[in-house]
Image (tube, rainbow, N blue to C red; front, side, top):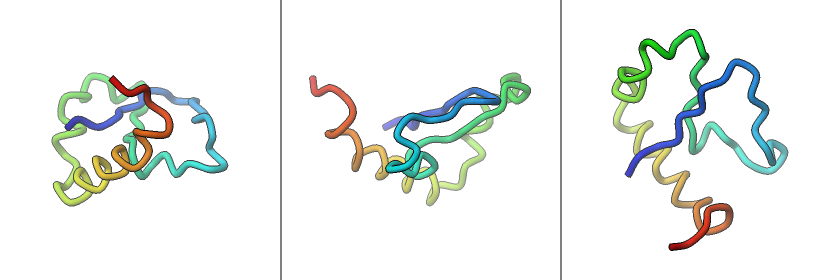
Length: 66
């Protein structure tokens, strides 16, 4: 499973009041785009798995089912 990577300097996530976006996404500043490939690889495995679990928790509520 992959993780969400949000590339923006000024992005304000929707539903910020009810969703802890850092539990299921990684935020990357635009200046870090040249290093984008390495950013997910630099996340410790434990944190990466925690982000994946966060995606699973919100998936059924916010993402369409196939």
